[in-house]
Image 1 (cartoon, rainbow, N blue to C red):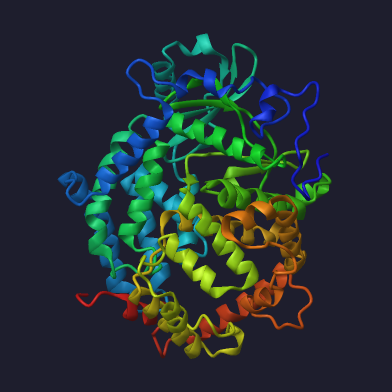
Image 2 (cartoon, rainbow, N blue to C red; image 1 turned 180 degrees about the horizontal axis):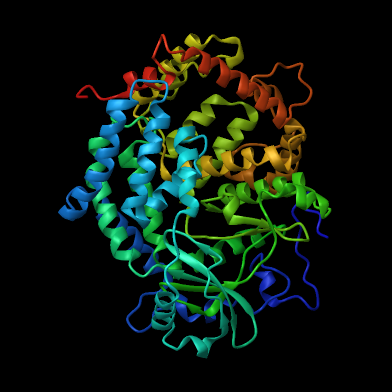
Length: 563
């Protein structure tokens, strides 16, 4: 069994598949990946090559969210009827009460269900954004993950045969009629190729592409009218969310781009020597716009930590290696899986993590990649100036922001405040002032930063089941030690930081989590106890006599004057 406590340097074996030299794949290859020989990556029969396809998708996303692009009037009216009706009922019944966010979430979810696959997909993205979107919205929208009925098998058969240009029986000896999973954009079936390999076949829904185009245009037209009228997180306003959504979902409509994402992520892991996270191989030939045939992997579901430990797998080490692999991809290569959640990860019997579903993959240009690197280095050394400058370079603050003024106005140069020492009124006041100052500076949450933060929050939350009693400070030291030994020289060369445990400011981490310098160890259970204390204090603040929940207090600050 592989010990995933640290990533492994790949040493070729005499019987290893040749493609392990170029990608982090499984050692038992159903076929060999040779990127230059894959026809779906090349220009042919009037189709552009994979690079041009990606540019086309980006251009389409920009067109659809352009205010000058007129949407379908009928679709706008349908969306306005569903979403507007939900908002109207919320406004007359729950708005301004302690049930405000929960009521809004309960009313929006069925509206999204009725509006179909595009809105269900948007809801699913929100549902994996714990810590970014309100908790009530996340919890309610999680119900959308299993509310997508599969398309009838004859429709699936027709799509596969049209895209592959052959009858199903000429390609597969068996093709399971019932899908393994059914999502908003596609569904997945298990099958066996005529060459004997057991595979997974991802098949796009038959009418989803034109519907997505109609819906994105409608969303972009409606979103500006929702600013300040829906209490979502202030920095993820509706127009920004639609822009993020358009950029991701348009790429998801072409499975050739997803297959290329698989190759790119596998190459990144191979480049860092990462062998504790693997990627399924896309088929050399059976990849089209609407059909993706890939290697069939098996393992424990991500949340089944108890079964993993019973099988002798060190779940804390699995979590650590997953975090390291994610950070290496983002900070050193500028490419990372953009939608980590329990449904997209499984743990194989040897302790390796298998990543799935590469439709949302973040790509950073060199400027943003180095900004991410500086942001992490600034955090590890508790250098506030470096962190704010990095956020500016990532697009979270305007390019002409006065860094010293931002630090001063947000009180970032003072020691962190322990929220458990504040009254509920003081916590509301703190949040109000920070929100007001951020919006005054034109702060926003750009796509790449949102995906990065979402992934980090997911991996942090995974500690609850995978490593509840592991010392977080010890894990930080272990990860910094790893980056020092493996990438220290490169990091110092690129951003001028010496990465080592000597420069690591553990007191800063303690303070950020609300613990004193005397605290020797901090576990996830310790953090959870503090969060529950804060939540109870805020809940007590929202007693019926006051009728002024925390969200409403913040909402009064951030809503536009015209409202």
